[in-house]
Length: 110
Length: 136
Image 1 (cartoon, each protein chain N blue to C red):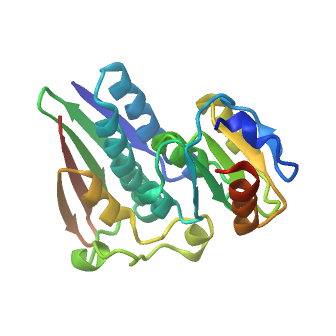
Image 2: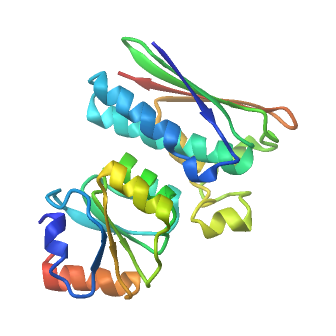
């Protein structure tokens, strides 16, 4: 599966386009940055309610190609610029983290 | 080869910049991707600590044939109880920092876990110098 495949889900909206052809091998869900730093794996989609610029640093350093910002939180301008520089895709959803994870698993087979 | 980075606590939004820049340097040097990841994670944690606890500081990265050394020095408050600081889940981060997802209490444990050698010199009221070494 690649990042582009996520766009088929109605509940996800594209906030910032990064490398849409980057491969996604699974997912990780968490809002504490150091826990994500320690536990997320390269190639995973990261679901979080955090939306500030440091999420891009975490994703970039871990090799996470796509961040899904849940519960309608919106990234600020700095986050957008940083994600653009790093080629990381930002997706948004009004659903909570668990619900979007469930959809990704059940409907997209992630 | 020596690379130096200033960490500015007045610009917390830039936290992670030094780690990201050094990561690019290591890529250019052709360092193994797994080792780059370990260094990036550990250095990022140190960088964040310098911003949220120590009013910034300086990071000096030394690359030689056998190892990479990352020295993070600050003039912050120092760490009164190092054993506690090394305990997973223990944090003194402010409520403000926690709301941003910092202060998980995993910074120091992550630095230990992802480095091959970790040395902390700290004095209350003087500052902290943290040295991480990574074998190539």
